[in-house]
Image (cartoon, rainbow, N blue to C red; front, side, top):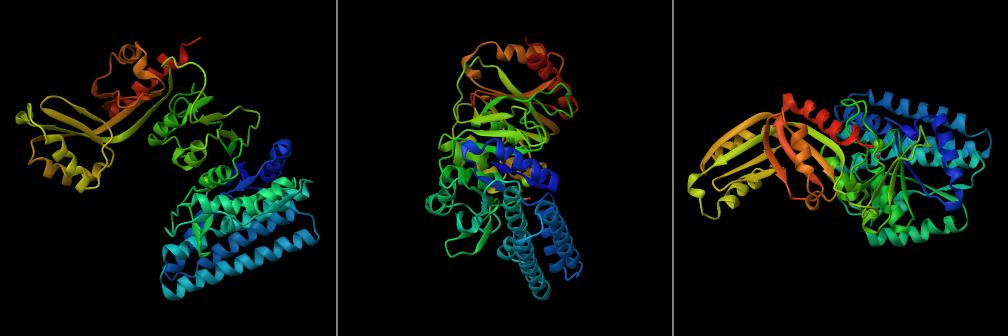
Length: 450
Ligand code: ASP
Ligand code: MG
């Protein structure tokens, strides 16, 4: 059970967390927590202040200390447990101050130092949550993830080493589970083989949960957040948006490209690879069923869409070369240009004499355009949007394209990409048409069904 920043953001929320854990004690949960909401941002800001030789980093130290001090007093009754927690807080804050002072005096902030600083939020939250569970009558024990999640040395975005982590989890975490004590681990942080603190990158606690869950062969991974799950469409755009009850890993990956912010599927890959289902749940509405993400889903595959997504600020590049007729090597030369400029291409469509493709980093276009002009005639369309219908079994079921284009009969479609994967039907429209296209498609596929 992983709880994100808002789910541990206040004493009330931590007490609610304890109830969610209590309800599931029979399933022998392991808890992974983020830092209290916004704490990681503050820690990073403090580091930047110190680097700029601005002594206001002291305010950050005080803010973080004060917030945790008050939460501890609220959550844990006076006595030895509270005293232990407060002295752990003092020691960790002392470490933070020393790190900031070092950055301040050296005017130097390496990725390694920043990891030591930004991981402090989780080092404070997990001990507090463990004590709060104990205070609520749930036997719990904090386990420092720096002794469990072993990573490489890519500071700022370290990669967990699966085998080492498995061994450490068996030694450090499994015995607690066996003794019916709830292990509580900090997300986000780990350490190298030599014991140097690392982080898995911003938002990395989901990844921690997946790594720990995979290492322990958990039956399920629950990501407790503050929304009901993945939605059929952005609810700010279409108020009748619904929660998607089940989604495959591939579909979730497509949705992530379009900014479905709930969770990045790459982070749960370690779990999905071991066949462990991942469930997104809302800690504010615990009875809502949430979204289940699984590598393979049961049920029928009728080629029904799962969600409508879109992304603005796309550029379409059209390259025409009449001599390409019956030639080979042209496509390779075109892609070499994108490769050299490290510019990812998203959708592609080709005809006998031309290639169209989309790029979602429009600032990269001028340089690419100049080089492409040597290969053929180039035209760039800006202010475009990709609209995507995400679902399953699209290529094996007739009628989907007809429904899509029927719904969009009054919208000008600039480019289409279909068949590259079975889970995505994408096309390009002008940005000005995008929201209307999304509403029409959502209406067609999600509002008229019975
Ligand atoms: N606290 C870290 C962050 O804000 C990790 C996480 O919340 O997942 O990036
Ligand atoms: Mg977070």
